[in-house]
Amino acid sequence: MMSDYVSTGKEIYDFAGRLFPINRSITGEGVRKTLRLIHDELKNCNAPELKIFEVPSGTEVFDWTVPKEWSIKEGYIENESGERIIDFQDSFLHILGYSVPVDEWVDLEELKTHIYVQDDMPDAIPYVTSYYKERYGFCMSKNQRDALKPGRYHMVIDSSLFDGSLTYGELILPGESEKEVLVSTYICHPNMANNEVSGPALSTFLIKYLSALEKRKYTYRFVFIPETIGSITYLSRNLSVMKERTVAGFNLSCVGDDRDYSILESRYGDSYSDRILTNVLEFNGKYTRYDYSKRGSDERQYNAPGVDLGVVVFSRTLFTRYPEYHTSADDMNLISPEGFAGSYKVMTQVIDILEHNAKYRVKVFCEPQLGKRGLYPTISKKGSYDAIFTQRDLIAYSDGRNDLLDISERIHVPVSELIPIKNKLVENDLLEVCDE
Image 1 (cartoon, rainbow, N blue to C red):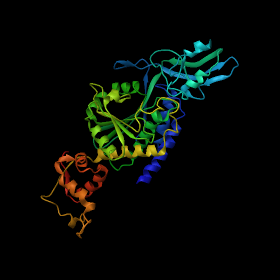
Image 2: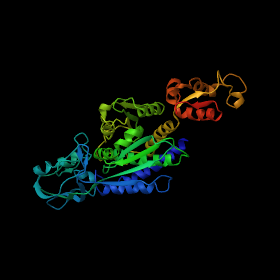
Image 3: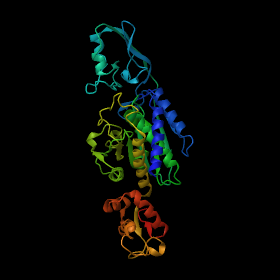
Image 4: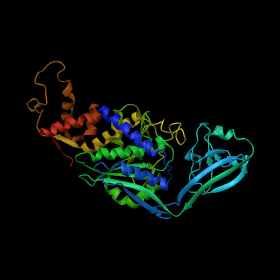
């Protein structure tokens, strides 16, 4: 089974590598190209088509307004000799996101007022944006800025802001129930691996995993959105049905590195999503738990007062908590097939819990005779019972009071180990669901 995770981790990493070179922002062709690649990747699996939606600039979405669309052709700084100091084609991070056009010659001191650097990472280019106030700017490493010599410099940004649209993707996998599980990730950062393409890549392969299941208990709602304005826009169009149907939700961000795991709680840390992800992480190695005060992505919108969808964030290293975050150092070398394999394992176990968790009740009085059903050793000797202790404990606590999560926490056994035992007991007519 572990080899399956490793193999899938490599596939996810390779797909992330295809998404990485695209110049994305909160609007524009980069978002559309990203969604088309995801759409095409899912063509040959048994999933509904990824639907792509366009919301016009100027549309009111709750307290916000969909911004103008941004497009950029080129951007650079050159010196008096015509040598390009930085070039947008070398790194999309060199241009301040959503920059308005500029074509001016300035001296060094004036130039520096339009340059952004990351002081604590002097060799890295920072990721900087100005979505809601019009300005222009450039980004480079601190060391490169500090090495600039006095003189005249040509600043060029060939960009435009225009009435276009905001683009997002949605894929809904129907289940036996209309009750839904939300999986959300964002598609708006250029040239960053862990903080950008890891989430969409993992989500794509979770769709493949769910599509291969013979049946699904729940309906799964996958959304691919530009961060913040995208979730606000999406909720403005879908909130009523989501409030009625959502039973759990997971925001996937920074899931490709191979450091520790992280959970960022829902607003009160007591949702079904909190319970499930915490249980899985308890049995998958070291992890860090963050309360809602550390929020920073679309979980802010999904947990906002009046929305209250109980969404948690799943990450390897949480956003802002690793030094490469929002810099050019967050590249394909920071993520790995092994990192993806671990994240895929965690999230498929989360799905398995969602699909199997219930309160079960044993159907016979006293202890059932397991031997006649082939579920118990027929020879009694020291050590012969070790393998069936978990089975006995599961039966002991299947009194209609506990779901599989409760039992897992009580007997300190992963739900992933309880599920096949539960299935055998159900097949032998010893357990029944009592909460549906």
